Figure 1 (cartoon, rainbow, N blue to C red):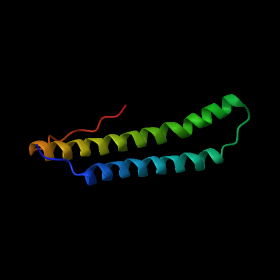
Figure 2: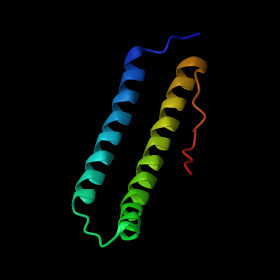
Figure 3: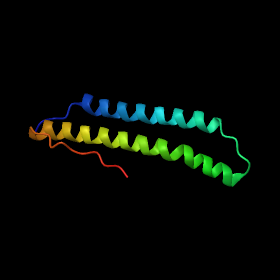
Figure 4: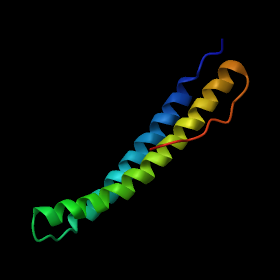
Length: 88
């Protein structure tokens, strides 16, 4: 059985950390600009900010995971299976 190089895990971790940091920056900028009249209004505006950012980052993280899985599988068995990214 082949050994998975530490660099592969580190690269995957770095990609996820960069995605997380970028998502946090986008959300922070948008949250800082919110003007609201009451708590219900604030809630709706926060949801409107978070939903698309969470959806996009979830899709991207799923794609990264599929690529990582295929790389690990190929290293272990000699063949990738073309893993598909599915996020909810």
